[in-house]
Image 1 (cartoon, rainbow, N blue to C red):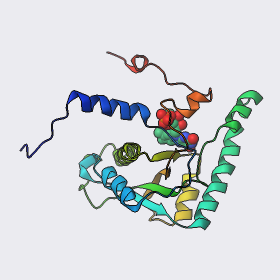
Image 2: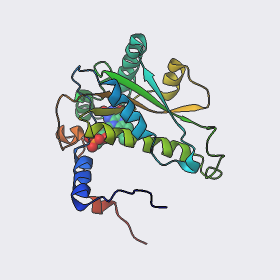
Image 3: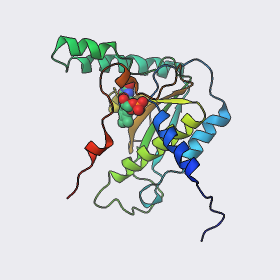
Image 4: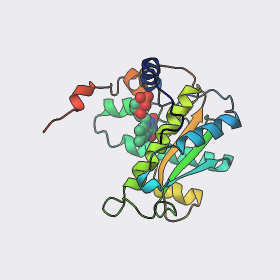
Length: 215
Ligand SMILES: Cc1cc2nc3c(=O)[nH]c(=O)nc-3n(C[C@H](O)[C@H](O)[C@H](O)COP(=O)(O)O)c2cc1C
C-alpha cells in the first residue's frame, strides 16, 4: 500500500544532512518561552519514532514545578562536582569544571523522559532476549524530538550527570518506569555547526570512516 507517499528529492536529502550537522546539544538558552503549539509538535514528532513491537514505551514528564527545577539543578551540580573528582590530573579536572554541562536553571522547558519497562502496547514482541530494546526505542523518540526542535529553531540539551534513582524518586513516577533523559528545551543563545565540547577543546568529532569495521 503506497498511499500518497511523498518523494524526497536530493535537495531534501541535502537539507536533512544539513539538519544533522546543525543539531546541537544546547546548554545556553535565552528566556523566550516555547509556544505551546511547538511543544505539541515536538511530542507528536517524538512519538513517530520506531519502537520494538510498536510498544511506544516512551513516557514524557513535563516539569512545571519551580521547586522541582531548583532541586534538580542542585542535584546535578552536586553530581557534577563528584564526577569532576574522577579526573586525577588537576588540569583536566579544572577543564571539566570550566564546562557548562546543563541549562536546567535557565531553559524555559524541562522534560524528563522515561521508558516504561512493562508497556501495555506491543504484546512483548521483540523483547524476550533483549529487553533493553524498550530503552533504545525511547532514545529514538528523543532523537526525533531533538531534530523536530532544531528545524523549528528550538534547542535541546540532554542532561545525564545525575543519579537516575534520585531523580525518579523526585518525580514520583511508577516503579516500572526508568529514567532515560532529562531534556532542557528552549531557544539557543547561539547557533553553531560545531559541538560545544569540540569548541571548548574537550572532544572533537572524529572521522566517520574510523568507526566502520568489516568482517
Ligand atoms: C545520551 C547523552 C547524554 C548526554 N549527557 C550530557 C550531559 O549530561 N551534559 C552535557 O553537557 N551534554 C550531554 N550530552 C551532550 C553531548 O555532550 C553532545 O551530544 C556531544 O558533545 C556532541 O555535541 P552535539 O550534540 O552538539 O553534536 C549528552 C548526549 C547524549 C547523546
